[in-house]
Image (cartoon, rainbow, N blue to C red):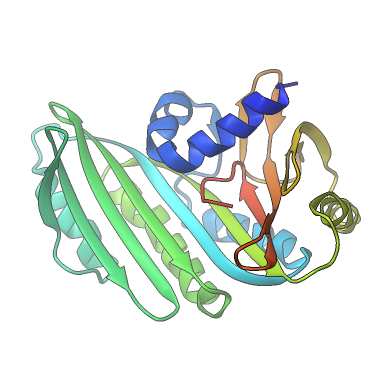
Length: 254
């Protein structure tokens, strides 16, 4: 089991350096997921939404991230980025240079759903593609449809993509984060076989990684196979509590 401080630092690092950690860990097959079949991608996401719907509080945010390598093999990366953006009904891509590397980027924001596309040069002929879908609960069906489209689209242009997802709930409660964590675990365990493997707690946060073989996404963490992370965080400034679920990891700020 990971030490508590290592677990806390690891989750913070994921939030801050998400794409970097994905490159370092998931690129070598540690993440198991339905990669390209659009029907399976949709069914898997819907199964995770069912888990989310068993969670305390109001669902405020849904995030799906598709990401993976693309090898140019003589093709023009700008054309591929433009093709992805066009299929997702996004604005034309912009070319920027960050830390000496070319990035093709497009952003589409709307009331209930936002899309981010980044195609980043790693080295000659090698690129990394990230498509992020963010929605409110009101935009969930639109997000699911775009998630299904991403599975088909990224495969068609040759991106070796995988996906992860996170859901964030909020509530006002007089209970401590540990009490809310226990209540949420008890509720989820009636529908899902889950076993805590890594745990961190302090005065305002409780965070746990679980093995739950019924879930479709997983990643190796030391000796354990992790399928889900959950964090309960008390926000003193907003005077509420956030419950965040990540499959298989939390890759958004909680």
